[in-house]
Image 1 (cartoon, rainbow, N blue to C red):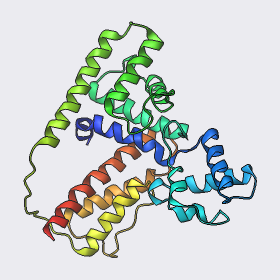
Image 2: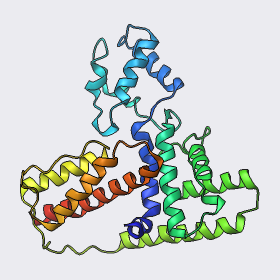
Image 3: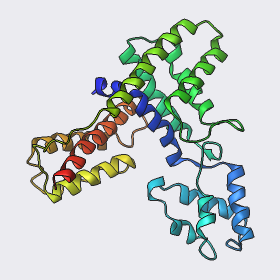
Image 4: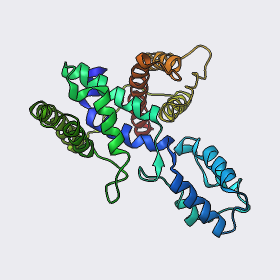
Length: 285
């Protein structure tokens, strides 16, 4: 599993960094801007403190589950779609949770440490955390959304330079070269024509629904659904997936640093295996 994740590391890192916005809250400036917009449109008649509480409730939901009606219920009348568009956050207008950022940095640190077989300073948890902090708090006119792997590399190089000058330049160039080669290989693989092969494993609708529900739960970091049949899955691939889901549920809400990396790895495994199962069965339907 580590080898598989390392082969997709640049892509997974992009997803994890951009995913930090999924649980971000508006920063004070953005919150006040939304408050003023709603006041000007006669949507809100209470004070800013109460409006902030409504924002906290709304943005406390996973981004994929938020709907306009979720915030409309706090307002004097429903907002129009243009106002609702302004509720979209970027890294300039959103506050990323420190714990979430630390988790991404920890995941990247451990994966690089194991895969590169080194504990060099440039991949330390502190350096990677500062790199992500810089990247996710962009200055005016800097990129503020949809970060790519190269954006991380640029931020990382700046962070190392700021902390250590040119002391680790040679070492950093070597690591960046290897990571960029991984990124290039991913792009080559994705550019290859895909041949659709009839799958050897067919899922019933009940099994397919469970796989899709499990994927959605893992994607949104929610409780993993149990397999719907009391006797459990009968297919080997689903039995293995159920075991991974059970393991994920054990560590899903952990705050222990030594278990966080296992949780993130397990979640990534669930997503990958569900993605392998669902498309193939839809194609076969």
